[in-house]
Image (cartoon, rainbow, N blue to C red; front, side, top):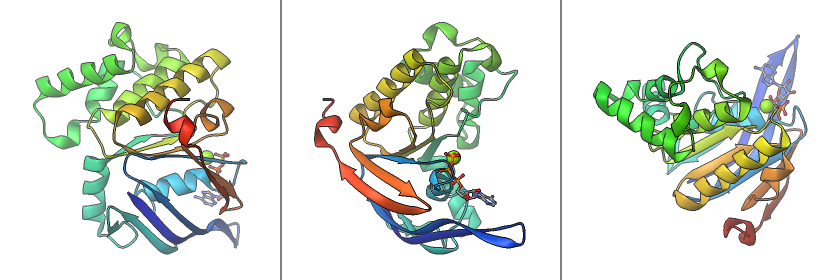
Length: 232
Ligand SMILES: Nc1ncnc2c1ncn2[C@@H]1O[C@H](COP(=O)(O)OP(=O)(O)OP(=O)(O)O)[C@@H](O)[C@H]1O
Ligand SMILES: [Mg+2]
């Protein structure tokens, strides 16, 4: 569970200061999914980086299961990132020149598993997102929607407790957007993940169990849709 209080993030930029986040307070429950929408520059990616422990807030606390990520040592933060947080970065973040299965297996490298087990788990994770027929296709040869499926498998293969995704349907055609949205809804329903997805896509916004709207680094609105969580 995430519990954010007063999260502010400032960047120096061109001699001035940009306030990317401005006093964000929110909770994401275990097994709950929060969709974050907002115009370009409203702070969605910044929020995800802070939730993922990739950046620290300038002010405020970012509690994950009672531990404040803002004040942890780099070593403990890295461990939480490795063991507990699965991330689908903007654009998917796959490594070209490697197959779908190699990309997913690579996410397990820090976990000290046997290579055969990494390979097996990667195959399983890809099958779970409907990629069983393209295990050995190079990342750059996959269609954009398929790349996002692989990116999701890559995030989920280590069985994290947290899933963070940045605009997972951006740049996809309508059919692929609907498929990826459906996949996320299935993941929310089937796994007890704490999940935050940034998007501008109506296909995802319309299925969100909870929806936060960011505006200029603030939570402008928060809504809860229990029927969406139930799959309706
Ligand atoms: N590393 C950085 N240095 C300086 N300014 C930054 C940095 N990262 C983000 N910003 C600024 O912070 C604000 C929020 O950016 P952010 O990328 O979080 O928005 P976003 O909602 O993800 O936008 P988009 O929809 O385009 O992805 C913007 O004004 C952006 O220019
Ligand atoms: Mg962004």
